[in-house]
Image (cartoon, rainbow, N blue to C red):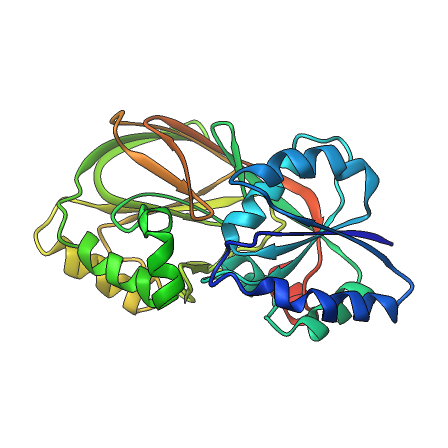
Length: 299
C-alpha cells in the first residue's frame, strides 16, 4: 500500500521530526511505500488531504487531535477516502487513545502493516466534521485557548491550569433541542457530546457504552438550575462521567440546537462555530486502523 505521512511540526512539544529516520527505516523493511509531507501553516492539511486523497491508500497522521481533525475535514471533501492511521505526537491524543494507538512508533506501524481496517462513524457540526467530541460551555474552550508556549513548557498540565481558571466563570446559557421528532429546553452550564468515553485525556467510563460505528452520537446536558453547579459538574467527571439525576442524556443520529449567538462550540478540541448548531452522524463514513482490543470494544 502507498502511505502519505502528514505531520504537524508544531504539535505537542514539536519533537516528532526526530522520528522520521526510524519511520523511513521501518517502511524500508516492508513492502509498503511512503511519502512525507510537513504542514506549513494552520489548516494547511485540510487542503493537502483533499487533493491527495485519490493518490494514496493510507493517510498516516502524526500530531494531536487538531492535526487529525484537519486531515479528516479534507478527506470528507473527497469522494475517495484513504484509510486513516495515527502516530500520536500531540498533548492529549484522545483519538489515538480511543483507537488503541500509543506513541511507540514501531508497535503502531506493525498495526498498520498487519491489521485490517474497520469502518468508523464521522460526525458533523454545521459545516465542520469531527470524530469523537463536540462541546460548549465550561471547559470547552480550553483546548484551543491555551497559548502554544505554555503547552511546550508544561505539556498536559497547561490544560489543567486553564481548566482551574475556567471554573471561576459563571456559565449559563439557554438551549432548545430537536431530536427524533422530540423537543426539550433547559439552561446549561455545559453540553458535552461524545462518540465514545474519552475526552481531554480523561477516561469517562461511566458516560455511556457507545460504539464508533453505530451511527449514533450522545449528548449530555449539564443543567444550570441549582446551586453548587460547579461541584456537581466536577463530581460527575471525577466519577467517570456518571450522569447526575437532574442532567439530561440524549442519543440520536441528529440534533438541532438553538442557543445564544455568543455560545462557542468545540469539535475535536478545535473551535468549530458559534450559536445555533446542527449535529449529525454519518455511519461508517471512513476506514481507520485500530488495535485488536479496541476493535472488539468499540466496533
